[in-house]
Image 1 (cartoon, rainbow, N blue to C red):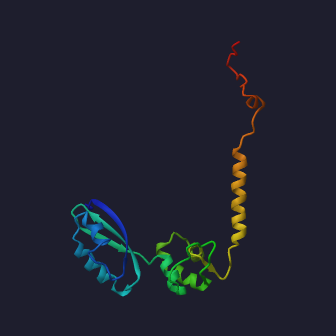
Image 2: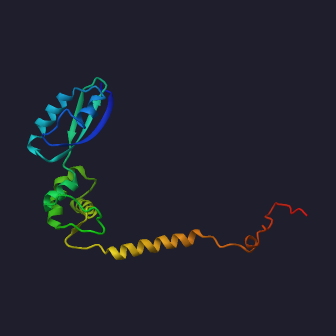
Image 3: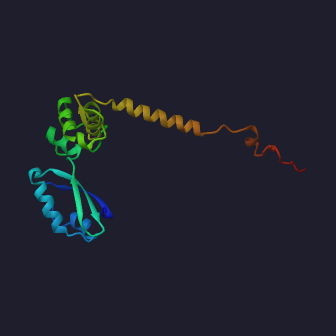
Length: 187
C-alpha cells in the first residue's frame, strides 16, 4: 500500500548549501519532518552543484517521512551564468542589458530539456529565448521595437475606449425615456 501524502513543497535551495534555517526549516518544520535528515541528504546529493540554485520538490507523507526530487537550475540562472550577467533588466522592454546567441540558447535548452514542456529542442530553445527576452536580454542582437510595441498598445487602448462609449439616443438627450415594449405609458 502506498503512503498517504501529507503535503508537497517546492523550494529553491543553493546546491550543497541547505541549512535548517529558513526557508528550509520553516517549510519542513510545520509538517513535523526531521529537518536535519533532509538537509544532510540534500547537501550530499547536490554537493557537485555547489553555488547553483537547485529547485527541489519535497513530498511529505503522513508518517512524517519524505522523499524529494531535484530539478535543473532555473532558466534565468542559466542564462545569467552563460552571458556573465549579475541581474536582468528592471525594465526589460525598455532597457536591454546583454545579448545571447542561439548556440548558447541551445546549450541551455539541452540542459533543461527534461524539465521543460517541449517536444523537441527547437521548442525548448523558443521557451528559453522567451525567458531571456523577459530579462531584457536580446537574442542574436535582435532588438524588440519598443516604440512600435508602445504605439500598438496605445492604439489598442484607444480602440477599447471608443468601443466602450455608447452613442446617446435622441430620447436620452432630452432626459425622457421612450416606452419599451410591454410598458404602458401613463398620462
